[in-house]
Length: 307
Ligand code: EPU
Image (cartoon, rainbow, N blue to C red; front, side, top):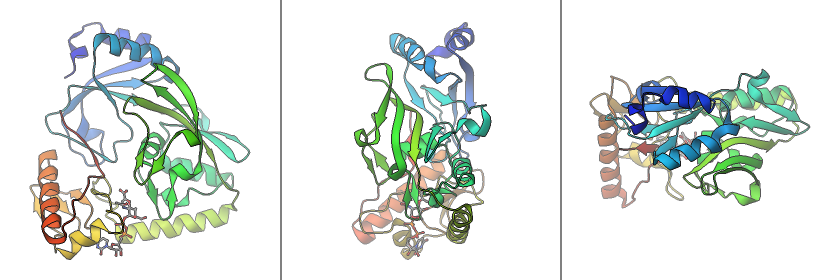
């Protein structure tokens, strides 16, 4: 529980900032892994009011984090004392996507997969590889999500960001942000609000064909129908985490309800009501075994939120 939960007038105060107070939400319901204890959620309906809301948080010393689609996130079983800010989906047509020639302005709250298909309908390609990556556009940007040769950072033209350091909303050109392998140069207190993508013209049929191929590859090599957070560890330079874990014969290894996927060894799936603690223990086991066998220290790809 956050300190805000002790304030009886908090729901009305949040409403005055165009935000919705959702106390003690179980993070297991907000993450694709399906684990995690309670946290207080503030759903933002009007991002333009964010500077005023954040000023309140700062004045009251309220710690906060941004919750995106929850698809690359592991929250501990004890829950969190921080307030989780969550941008509400746009109710506008086409999920709030605004097209202008080869550019499209996309709210950070938009679903990544729907964005790929909405762009395809207008013969705009370049995002095909991202089709099966679950989550929000904001989350994909922050992590520079990538698959099958596509990285979202490659097609970014500009970003609208609430910058905690100055307490204001700013539009940044792509050159101002470094997009690296599953990492970007955004500050922890930057909140991504929207992005302008610049996409190449491509015939719809061609995009659909490429999307089909990516979907097929993903379905044959990843446990797409099970609860997971995608790849658990980053690939060390020049190496494949999944291959190393597989070579150690660890597929199918479990701790409690958490299992190393038989389909892809860099996925941990929540098969039997796993807890966050089960998953963290399984991650430790993998790290130790890979270090011992290969002398390689695996780095987490999944974001872990501890108290
Ligand atoms: N491999 C095995 N056994 C396994 C898994 C993989 O031998 O259990 C081998 C494969 O046969 C292949 C190599 O390892 O030779 C690489 O595997 P794969 O092509 O599946 O790609 P990956 O490096 O494991 C990366 C990304 C995925 C992304 C795919 C497709 C990381 C950590 N993972 O996986 O991204 O979907 O490429 O582009 O960068 C994610 O970010 O969450 C994620 C799943």
